[in-house]
Amino acid sequence: MLTMKDIVREGDPVLRNMAEEVELPPTEEEIATLHEMLTFLKNSQDEEIAEKYELRAGVGLAAPQIGLPKRMIAVHFQDFDEKEYSYGLFNPKIISHSVAKTYLTGGEGCLSVDREVPGYVPRYNKITVKATDLNKNEVKLKLKGYAAIVFQHEIDHLNGVMFYDHISQEDPFLIPDNTVACDE
Ligand code: 4LI
Ligand code: NI
Image (tube, rainbow, N blue to C red):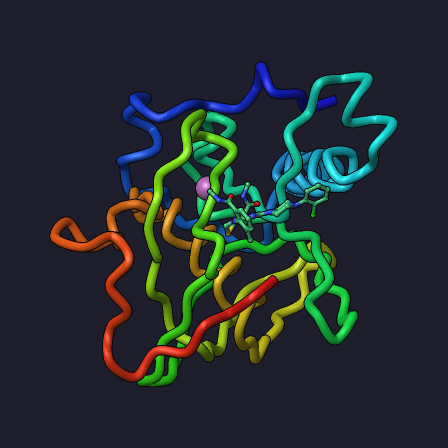
């Protein structure tokens, strides 16, 4: 089982490198790893399990965060209209996005970052993601608001990008034009 000791922390170059595409169809080993990443997220959100294994809660995890430079992400959360998102995805790609942006009013956290970084992280408010899921099926997901933020945060990890790269140096709480708040 994956625990916090498996999570790579900032400073490790794997978090700053471009991850490699997964050759399709994924191997059974790659599928098993992605299942483990999804289980980590579920465990991290289960109060009893999280306390027992000292897991920090997360809703998303990218393979580079466990030291694996491959284009794989897991997400597990509900958005505010109770819609469930639970996916393990290979080669996720943003194929289109809105002009309008959004940001989490509480800022963003990351399992690989053991400090609070204050500021708003502007992201596209709507995105369409194409990927291959754990059943080896191609999926196309239309996401907005919180869901769009979580997927963008995880896909960024595949490109060596950290959330704080998007925070304005001059004013961390600057809200760009055409940007709506996202409270979650
Ligand atoms: C316990 C059980 C306030 C502060 C509000 C906690 C179950 C922050 C928000 C959770 C913040 C669950 C989260 C992310 C933020 C903050 C991630 C709590 C886990 C809220 C997820 C990837 C950014 C995702 C909204 C510094 C580890 N997650 N909160 N950001 N939750 N969680 N991110 N921001 N301020 N990070 O962290 O999984 S996208 Cl579900
Ligand atoms: Ni992260």
